[in-house]
Image 1 (cartoon, rainbow, N blue to C red):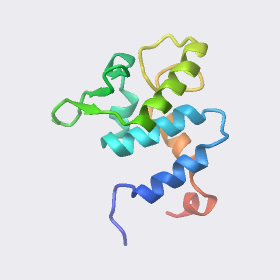
Image 2: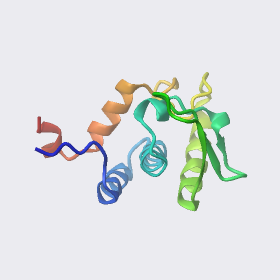
Image 3: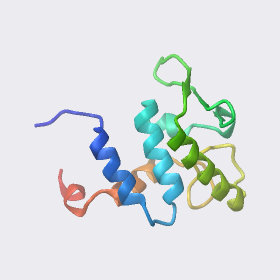
Image 4: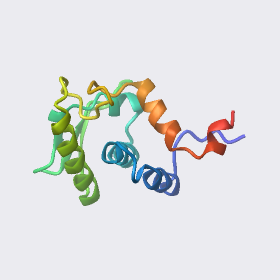
Length: 130
């Protein structure tokens, strides 16, 4: 049995490819790339706020959970590009929240909505494994 609790770069690339052409492509691609590159837990990604993303300085301020040390992470060019695309779409939706990642209903992305997004990007065969 494989007890691995993280994704490989190849698996993340497959998730990013699966998100192409979807209604929330920009959000989903940004979400999974940032989670992988910045080692974010689901709760940390869902709790990320607009004020924690500084495009001009190319940094992400992460409030770590589970007694982790809150830190500042550098953002790469492809992350900046996805962030800008996501922010443009987010602005059109006019959410009533400071959450960086928002749901279809314009509220903060939750654990449950994250799980739904992640499951929808997995191949059918992977979803049925227990």
